[in-house]
Image (cartoon, rainbow, N blue to C red; front, side):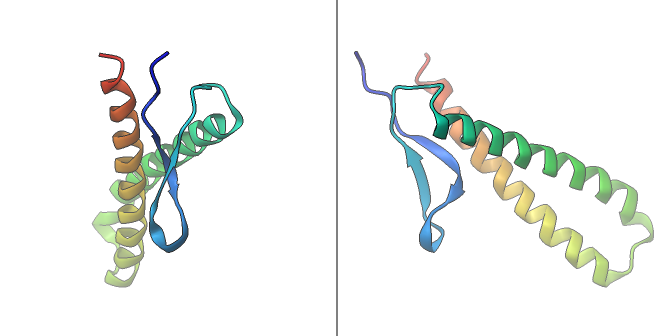
Length: 93
């Protein structure tokens, strides 16, 4: 049996360092929690993007900063999910 490569988890550890899961159990509790968290993060990004499209034309600058900060967070989460999923896909080839 070939060892799986570590899975990048959708949250950071202490000091903002990446967290990884090393297991061969794809349906384990931490894997399911990570899958759920990735789904939530991507959903939040989708909602923020829709909100931005609606809000941008008539928004005062202070509110734009808040929106930009949340969009930045959502993009960071989405890129982490993409990196994690990309690593897992590369090991299937």
